[in-house]
Length: 168
Image (cartoon, rainbow, N blue to C red; front, side):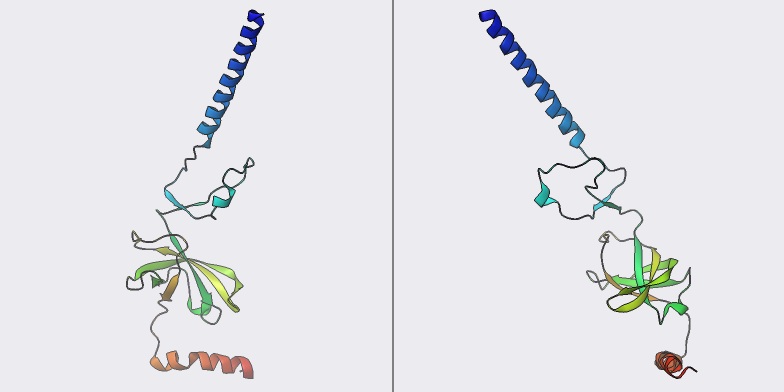
């Protein structure tokens, strides 16, 4: 009878050892290492701690901090003055005292509605990336559109509005 008890105990010991190896393997697979340096920018998953994750499900999104880009929303009334390669400056809402230069890389050809206004998405390369810059920051940007007279700057929007209304 003691031999049978010994075999049962040995089987249970092997079973527990296998479970321990499986848990250790799962812990090893749980280590996530990103191929780039960056910041986690995806949603907060604290409510889902302990929940199972399906294979292929996106857990985190990481934005590279080495090559930040700016996304500008240019109103359709001003997009005609914007071309690739133009320079400008921007300031973030968090650091309004620090102006950062940029160069326009791409103008998306299709307008979209943002805050009840038609705008064009413009992608810009940041010239000097500062340490405090993070993905998702917002602010204001000014694009250098060349030299214009003060009269043109004061009246061009009114003139364009009149042209549209009067079909001139």
